[in-house]
Image 1 (cartoon, helix red, strand yellow):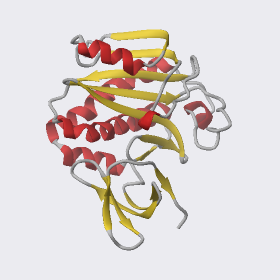
Image 2 (cartoon, one colour):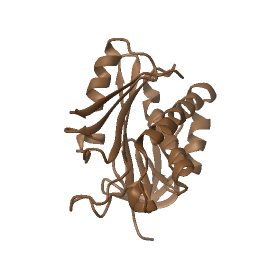
Image 3 (cartoon, one colour):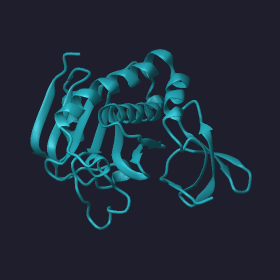
Image 4 (spheres, one colour):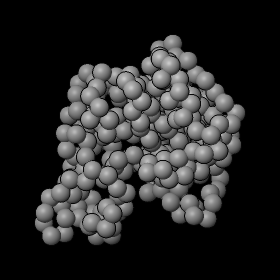
Amino acid sequence: MNRQIIWHKTIDTTMREAARLAAEGAAAGTIVGADEQTAGHGRLGRAWHSPPGEGLYFTVILRPQLAPQQLPLVTLALGCAVHDAIQLLCGIYADLRWPNDVLINERKVCGILTHLEGSAILAGIGLNVNQESFPAGLAAIATSLKIETGREHDRRVLLEFLAPSIDTQVNILARAGADALIRHFAVRSTYVERKRVEVEGVRGVTAGLTPEGFLRLRRDDGELVTIHAGGVRPLED
């Protein structure tokens, strides 16, 4: 794909600029990236640590032929794309934690945010690449590719592999359907089934995904419930 990449040294959020461009009709595949975000955020408005020159922060404009209710499935597709790029380039295993976390050794290396903007889907990626440390509040739960591999990584090369990986996974959803995409996510995630977790105070064992991409949870009282949103945290057996 002959895509446009618009790169900023510093920006508040790549998502906001991508929304503006999407509203103006920017083509599918257009990427807005930055060396630093001053107001980067993740799901539920949580701040995303975006130090200058250390991570890969970008938003890609997608225009697949999907219904608005399929937006959660796009988030799963992005997770698969990041998983595959990390495995290919870094040779290490990444895990996917529903709905939008990419983990290495149970610590978060990447966050994903999707947003509907008119007929476009904005796919935001924040990947920790060359960080050597994190603030006190994040040190126990975050990691980077450099920490995990012991070497620096070229952010440009990562983007070159990650962008087409996103296209591939979103095309699987658009052409092969939700079931195919859910299978792709499930084989890359230890969290989809038989994982004891807590979600917003509810404890149970994960029991797969719905056709819409939501998480099924078998609560401790035996009831099967569907989780539409919330932070998933593992529990000791």
